[in-house]
Image 1 (cartoon, rainbow, N blue to C red):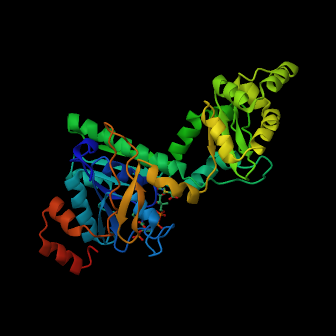
Image 2 (cartoon, helix red, strand yellow):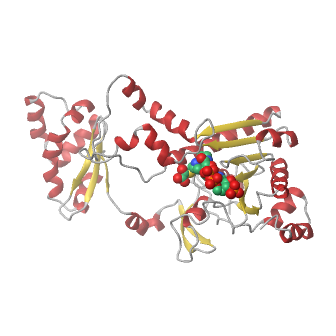
Image 3 (tube, helix red, strand yellow):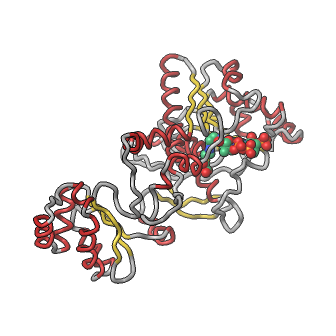
Length: 396
Ligand SMILES: CC(C)(COP(=O)(O)OP(=O)(O)OC[C@H]1O[C@@H](n2cnc3c(N)ncnc32)[C@H](O)[C@@H]1OP(=O)(O)O)[C@@H](O)C(=O)NCCC(=O)NCCSC(=O)C(=O)O
């Protein structure tokens, strides 16, 4: 159970009209900090209800993973009665988070009439309201042309939906900032965030867009680290190790552990170069990698790891998801979760550690499974009225 120490948002109620990654992650982040988050979906589920990966039962592991610790209500959002019910819930909760296109009766302007101090946080694709997903935003901004093997011609997509993740967290921050202001002044707020803006801001914050404006093309460099020395090496047992040096100390340690001090010193003198400097390590990365590769090739991954473990060098074995899943029991973030429809498995709680404590994972709700408690607590509806709404097809 989430306890007081790990639930600083206890008392905050949020209605979430969402689907896919970003907005559900924002809502889950709030729930993991103790907020009461009610996800509202169309009857039968939103567009993400069956999204892969699936459990053998057919239940979506993606949906279960992104909706942990929430309550669920399903409503006929196409009917005026259904939307009226959701508007009442949003007004009662006082806070709404959404990435759905606004429906009549559920726009900020309409809801604010009912609840003047409403905090309404909305994720858009683009600023102007056009839809977008991580893949399309990425394509628009250049990342797929800077990703992948050096001699590859076309774009390379990334499997990590980075903008969705960043947006979910930004959405939670924006909502909490508005809620903080509301607590001080009583004012509500309309918070908007666009997936495209988050990606554009990040590309700008990292200097990539400034570099392009100044006329320099960012190269595609495979698994190499841009601007310093980092790449993968093959080991004697056919595995691969990622090695990164970011400081002069990391580089000194890598040279020492591989016994290449004299060779590197001779190369520095001959070039000339100073491998204590990041730009020199980057410029001469092919030569450096060529000298280092035999050390890795002569060792198993375990032997290389054992030698590197005592140094400041940043490194890791490459593993598949299947391999990473073999030692989850040792991770303090993970705890056994009895997820209905999926069965017991190890799932992450909140990565935030508060006074040394972490909120463990809570199961995702059964779709539509909390109608009685949600409508009873937020709208004071007795069970007979909830049953009537269900009989009329207004709720699922
Ligand atoms: C999520 C979207 C791409 C979905 O595209 P849309 O064209 O809006 O979908 P459709 O109209 O075809 O949706 C079919 C029905 O589902 C309803 N619908 C659509 N989106 C939602 C959400 N978020 N929640 C609840 N219901 C929804 C929609 O009203 C329709 O209902 P009826 O009218 O009743 O039929 C877009 O809404 C969008 O760009 N949202 C803002 C940005 C965003 O969240 N992008 C995805 C991030 S996650 C991501 O990138 C990823 O997972 O990958």
